[in-house]
Length: 586
Image 1 (cartoon, helix red, strand yellow):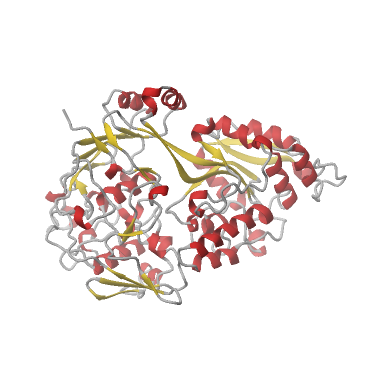
Image 2 (tube, rainbow, N blue to C red; image 1 turned 30 degrees about the vertical axis):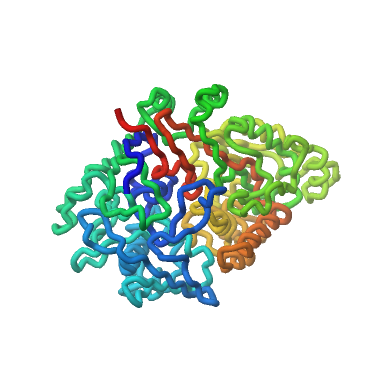
């Protein structure tokens, strides 16, 4: 079991405690804490960079990758035998009904509020169970204790990735309680979690599951707003886990603080890692100083910063206008304003290259010299628009004046509104820019009844390494507000004429890519599936044009001089905490 040992000391500016419930783990930190440390799932990843297999799905609790029926509707998964939970359930072996129990908890809309239950609605009977109409999820069966069968209502090629998310981590039985150890903890299971990974919360072994849930004292190693302490799980055996290293004996996480102060503490060895974007000045210090440079780790992230058009708001109901804006925009200038190459590279298309296995690397249909935009090319495109009646490349329609535009008041893109004004003025488009906090901006952009024409400062990151996590939420129209409640197709792409009328638009139709989405979703993981998503990217960029993709992100992570081993987790998009080794404590 072992490893280098020592204590890994971390500070997090954000408080992940609300998400430290497997069904609500929907940010990079909570996803990493579960993947690296607290739970095992049927499938997982190795906590490495993409080039070292970190984006490959691997067996974890499962003995091997799933067997999928020819029609794609039945998945059969064999579980490893002999895996056990952390204390106080260290005499309990993990079996297939424990996975069913977890999925039944996911189906509960209250337990999984704010989480990602939408990833499992294709399981037969999942919604009916969640609505209380049935006593079980009909699509889940356990022919024996170590076999799980999952039936889906339509082919779901990335179901394996969905079964790698922490929401599906096993829950041990506890007497006759239907949800086992999670019974009675609809909103706070994170403080009573029974671990299955190499670590557990400090004090988890002392939780008394023999008493009623309301009488249980929570673990001391998860204090919301204050601290998280992980210690080794004595039930975990490295011989049964090829995905995790568990180098540190103990992981201590403090919550809160000012990023600059925290990075100062890291610099003198009081911390080993800070979960917060390094201030630009700190980043530049580490880049410029040869002695510090080795402690800065830069890794591509499957994330895109972009600007979104509303395809139902004139003049952006005209594809020539949307293309013209892509031609005129100064992406290199935008990147420089955001912080330069330290924060990423200019994006020529929508899906990050890491999600497409590099198929579209270098693809940029609106490429210009130095990525600074091309006014002449943009005006030639604008001249084909119905909003340019004299064909001089300048919009002469009232719709191009006072274009309602939202941007965020914080973040690396907050300084860009003037660049946008200047660039679009070359086409006769005059922006009316309103500045809001990020949450308020996104809420208004996401409410299509607001009829916002352009949303400038947006970004999207994978939930797991499959393009599905970009496709339907950002471009699907068939399930507005259903598949991803309240999210995230800001372009009205795929909306019906009835929906547009209900939302108050005069435009009566917009393009749709729902057919292509359905095609890609049903294909099993592999080259054919990846090529399908690449075809969608080309379709969006060349024919639909709902965005100006601006930047592919790079993660900048700084570690202390105590760190002797480091790895970047391409699944969670941050450092792999189980693969960080530190020098022995003094």
